[in-house]
Every structure is written in C-alpha cells, then in structure tokens.
Image (tube, rainbow, N blue to C red; front, side):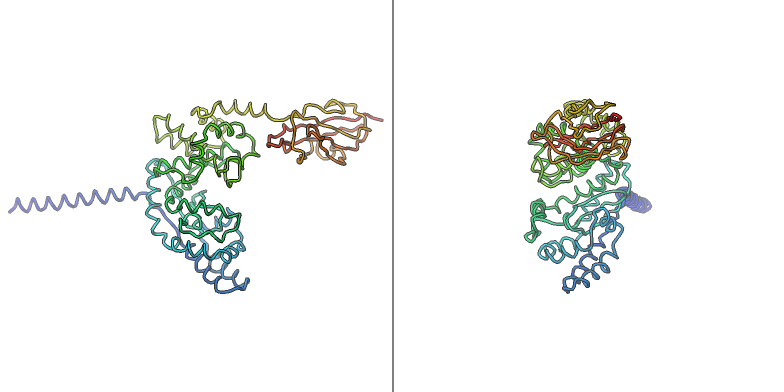
Length: 445
C-alpha cells in the first residue's frame, strides 16, 4: 500500500515536473511577446462606410477626420508622416475604387488569421539574431505607397498592399497604379511573414546613408535575414532577374554605384528603368550579404555583423563588401575607375584658366568638355568667393556637337571672377561632370 501510494505520488510528481518543464519551455518560446495593433483597420472601415453614405465632400472629410485620422494609432500616424499621405488622397481612393476596397475587406478584417504566422516569423528572427529588440507591428491603411516599412521601433504593414491576394480586384486602377495588378498576382498574404521580418530587420539596423551602396545593402541585408529566418525568398521579380542576368547586373552596378543620379535605377522604383524590373539593387545587396554569411565560420556573428553594420562608417562598409570578393575589384578601385570615367572640362577657349590679365572686353567664355554632354542641362553656381564675384551672364549656349558650352558675359575691369560648372552638367547617360571652377581676373583699363 505504501509502495503503491509512493508510486502514485511519484507519478503525480513526475507529471507536475513534466508540466513544469512544458510550461517553462512555452514560457521560453514566448519570451519575446509580440504586440500587433489592428485598430486602424477597424477605424478605416468605419470611416469608409460613412463616406460611402454621402456625396457631400465636406461631410466625407468630417467622417475621415473623426473616425480614422483623429483616432490613428502611433503606427498609423507614423505612416501618414513617413509617406506624406494627405486626407484628400484617402477620400479620392475610397470614392474611386469601390470594387478594390470591397475585394480587400475580408482579408483586412481577419488579421487574426495572419497574426500567428507573423509572430512565428518574429520568433524565427529572434532565433538567428538573439540581440533582437522589440518593435510593435501595426496594420496600417495607406493609399498605395508601400506594402510595409520599418523604422525606429515601428513595423508598419501597408494593409492595402500586404493583405491583398489573387482575388483582389484591381480593374478600376488608372495607369499609374497598373503595376498593382502584377503585385496582387504574387498572392501577398502568402508572403506576409517574409515581409514582416524584412521590415523588422529595418528597425534593428543603423541609420542609412543616402548613397546607392548603402541603400542596396540596407535593403538586401533585410531580404537576406528574412530569407534565413523564414526559409523563403522575396516574392518579387528582381530575385530571378538577377539570378538569370547576374554578370550584366554586376557590371552595371560597378559602373553606376557612385553616381547618385542612377539611384532610381536600383531601388525604390517601378519597372520603368534600365532593367524593366523594379528594385534590382535589393538582390545585389542580398548577394553581398549571402557571400559574407557563407564565408563566415560563426553564422550567428555574421548575421549580427550584417544587421548592425554602421553605414556612416565607410571603412567598415567597404571592408565588409571587399571581404566577400563578390565584386570584380575593391570599392576603392571601383571608385577610382568611376572618377576616371567621368567627363571633365579640358580647357577654356578664350584664355587659360587662372589668368590674371583677361581682357575686360571679353564677351564669351567657352568651356570645352572631354566628352559629349547633355545639351538640355545647364548647371552653374558660384565659386568660393560667392555671388559678388560671379559675372553678369546673358546666356548659356551649347555648341551643336555638345562638346562645349559658352557663357555670354559682361565683365568689368580689374575684377576677379568665378563661375562654377557643377556636376549637374552630365552626359546623355547621366555621367556627371567633375565640378570645375573657372577662375580669372580682368586687366585694369
């Protein structure tokens, strides 16, 4: 009897210990609780229904303000500001695309169906990046600027994008929104975990620097980390495009990466670019991140290095890229090649630049270029001496062959002048001029 009771007690104790372990395991799994806010979707639909009940524009605006804008969560307010949305845009979209909104509504009102998948993605992210800090996820409602964005401690889902699917009706959209038809055919709800991890990565990254190299790394690293966490690649066309055209893409990237005028070819764009596919730079950044990860012995450290890369620290950024050997030369060498390829001013026709005895009766100053320029661009500024030393310019005219530009001027005697030919001058292919200061002094009469 004692033995039986003892066994029963042991059994109960074993069960309690097992339950305790399960509880501890669950607690450990849920040690990174994720807050997801969906109140803005409810507010949006309440405003939408009211707006549909009247044709009076003032009343529609009143409903939008009272029911949606004034009740906006911190995340929705951030979206308004970050994407510069105006109230009129919401009202116009609500009135113009009823088939679209009605086809989207069911998914947006069942966000609970997606929350478990989103939370699972965050936990997967935490597993490969133990230093993950908490950000709040918001289902926001915009008007077609972004499927998602992440910054500070905010992950913002652009629900009108991300909660669409192959049944979403886009037939009412004008030409400038026609790309959304292709987007919805990717069945965005299938990719919501990847999207959220990508944006969550952005909340962990260092501030970006406004140049192509930093921007493609910033986005490509977010894609790569999302891929390592979820096991899924980005659903967008740039992935396969780069896989099938990698040599061509790399060659163009190496040529254009330092030309800020080419930024629109590589990221945050439509398919109307040199590739015919949007955001090709994301995959270039992904490939660099992949190369860094593949050669690292400590994979967790590699992920940490990628996420915490300091974009303001140029030597650190260059060292990471160079160590991958992904590009054909070092960043320094590529920059030197780029500088050597840019157009220059090779001479001034009327006098030698720097002359101190220029005839004050000179009426033209002609700068000769090393290559043909875009004759539609005239980019002129002041030198270091400022406006007082800038001549009176009556006209600026290109030669027929676009190999020179002539400034028609009026000069005074015994005065120093400066004319800055800025890097806004460029070739037809947007190769920027090395800035050049025409600096001279006129003779005394």
